[in-house]
Image 1 (cartoon, rainbow, N blue to C red):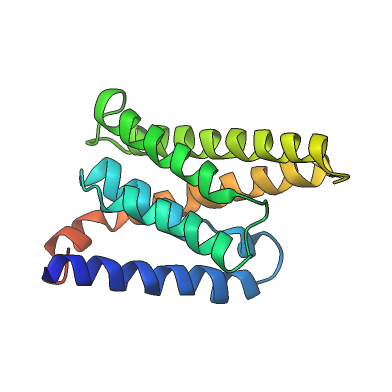
Image 2 (image 1 turned 180 degrees about the vertical axis):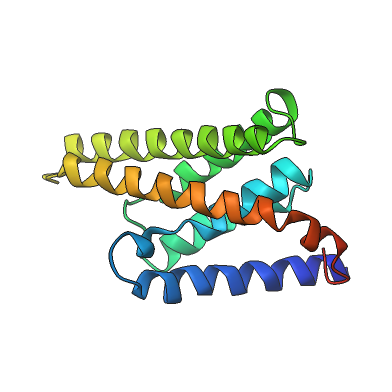
Length: 167
């Protein structure tokens, strides 16, 4: 029960930190996928399903507060979370940095493809005009920030493991 409350509290702090602090930073720093990076770390490197729950909750909260870049982002986040769990368990090793990066970029690619499909379907049904160059430019910048987040998390992984507050 304690682990549940610690995980929920840490998710809430991370969500608020990403959506309030990082989003107020200039340029591409505002696109830092902190929750996604930490979720992949929990799924891939630690083997904890909390990361899956974090990704699903992130999609729910983004839709609930209407701060998602696309409508119905919950579906894209559930698909990306499910694929990340499958890749972590069956494709990539959790011992190497490249395995963690592979899982992170595979999950992020799935998220971007899901969001692209959702936007495309919505542009067919509504009179929505999508500027695809901005969408893909943002996705590229976000993937570079994901690389930075994953590098930072993997570099301090030993300190996180030895911490008495580790979930």
